[in-house]
Image (cartoon, rainbow, N blue to C red; front, side):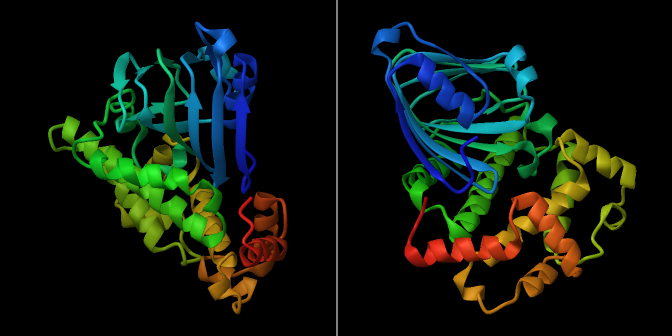
Length: 324
C-alpha cells in the first residue's frame, strides 16, 4: 500500500510498470492488455488511517486477483470503485456488474475477482480493511460485484461525494484528513447497508443487526477504560465467546478493534491545532488510556514513533501547509 501520509502521483507507459504500481499500492494483481505497446496509466493516491484513497486513469486492460496472488498477500481489504469514465466489468462471487460513469461497485481482495475495461477509463478507488466496515462479512458478500447505479438511491448522493474526496487527495492530512476518512467510511457503510436491506426486501440478518449494535456500543463508550469483551457482551445480551466470533469473521479481535479505534481518535486529536494546549496524557486518558506508560508503549508499537514525535511532525506540517 502507498506509504501512510504521503501523496503518490505516478504514471506508467507499460503493463509491467503499472502492475508494479497497483500491486504495491493495493494488493498483488495481474495486469493484461490487448494493446501493450499503447498502454498508458496514471494514479494519484494517499493513505490515511489505513484507508487508501486513489484516482486512476488507465487504457484498455484487464486485472485479475487469483487464488495464487491471494495466497501471497492474504490481507483482507474491501475496494469500492466509483466509475468516472469508460465502462468496466466487475466479476466476483459468481456475479457480474457492468459499471458505467457514476456507478459504484464493491469487491473483496480476499477472494478472486476480475476487472475488465475495453476502453480507456477513469475511476476513484477506496480500499480499506474489512474491520473498518461495521457490516457482517456474510452480508457484504451479497453485494460484491453488484452495480450500485449512480443515478438511483443513496448512490446518487455518494457518487459526487467520493468524486470530490478524490479531488482533495493532497489535502487529506492532519486531524481534518482523519475526520474525512472516518466520515467517508461511515458513508460507505451506510450505502452498503441500505443496499443489503433493499436486496433482502427490508430485512437484515441477525448477525448483521447484532454487529451494528456492538459497534455502536463501542463507539459510544470508547472513553471508558473498563470497556472490554465482557462488558460489551453483557450490554448486548450475548456471550463473550460469540462476541469474539463476530470479530473473528471480520479478520480481527474485539480487543484489537477497540485499540485501533482509540488510537485513531488519539491521532486525530494530537494533530488538531485547537487541542495543542492539552497534554498527550490528557488526550490519551480521554480515549480510554489512563495509564500513560502503557499508552506510550502501545502508540509507539503501532505508529513506529512516539506520540510526541507524531504530534510535533503533524502540527509542523499543518502550520507550514505541507500535505505530502
